[in-house]
Image (cartoon, rainbow, N blue to C red; front, side):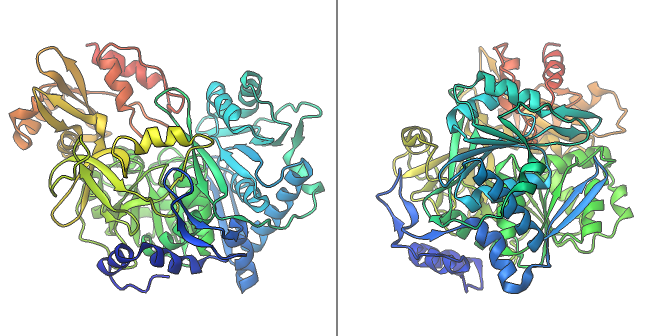
Length: 628
């Protein structure tokens, strides 16, 4: 465990001896067998951590806290404004439920190394299902609840699960999403057929079960015997999480057991400043990597109390929902996406609803998922009077690449910066030939190999595609796919995906910098800038903005002001002449703006509707605006 008293000291210790650094951190985890090597470079595409060691992730997340006298501490708070329910589970409660579900899965034939697909809404049983798989040494693959049947089918075909755990339905404000018909259709399409389904029946829409294949979740758990934990290799997979691939086939990012446990246990204190007993809320979904790392595994490994929220930032019932949860559960740190803050700001620009609640427990707001535009970061900072930390990471890395660190004292607030590299990451901006650029120059943000513990060591049964996707462009480096700059102080500024760097008459310009200017306008709630094809200049930028609630000024006046503002702040080189007000921006369910899809619409190319889109109707609205 790190004894460093400053960021520079911790980062320097890692740089001098990475293996000694991670070996020290590994003592925070309970092992049944110590490693033969801290890092073995001969395993996988770039090597693997803690080779030869054995442990069980579920034991580290639950059993050891109970054994150490924390059994009556609250482990999980389930807060569901959609159903009006609130449930709390102690560590002893959560362990007992996990033991029983592990027993039910074992009775269905699930053993170490088998895959289990979890297709569930934001209910406690989703987290329990993940932990039960980890307890058995089975490999879980969580698919976001309500995912389209075709996309679910490809994941079933690739992972080849023995069992699927699902629920009869998910709930959205004002509607019920029936999961079972989607799941049945996906299985019918898939080349692989699971042996069994466990279905959690929710009263809002009970599902019809197929005799001999489908089993009622509650009945199966009630009949099961508690199952103990199974030791696995540190290098064995804990889970597979699929992310969209450029070829149409999803990429199954693998997470191992040992490195994952060490990295997340360490991150909870070093980055987020939390320890056993602290209340932590990650406002995300278990279907995304953020939910895996910081709704379930990270806080439970550290012995914290984690909040699971089945609701929205607005509409359940209003834009004060987040402040209510913080106040009611005495949340110490909130982790959410910038889009959540933008949604709240759009509905309640002056933050009046926050005044109804006691937010004194909150110490820090962490944001990730996409870059937080500075105006939103400043708004949240001024509203809450608490530090706001934008930090950057990816599904593939599993936790932060850059951050500010509560353990060492947060860096000065720099709106728009993602912080500095987490110990374990040697981060540089490279030019298109793989040459390191001087500080202050924009390039391809890349990580020198090997990646630290916790990062995905490969893709599921596809080392070659892992190398092709991440390691082949710049040998010796992992290419993140993001463009950005490391400034003279070492702070990292992520400006967007590399395909969001547009070429205007030979000038490489960041759409992120233009978005930053647009977002600074007092009437703008959120925005996106895309580069549309232009026969003369190659590409020209188009700015798309959503206005704050209550703005009634003529849209044409606002659009003229936005064009003038970009020309003033960035200059004529941006060639920014086109700003358009839109009712909303098309987004994924995790809140990421679908910039690539919008760009295809602007270029009159076929735009395939992504399976993760929150509302397909938003694309039709975008077409209407771009065609005008």
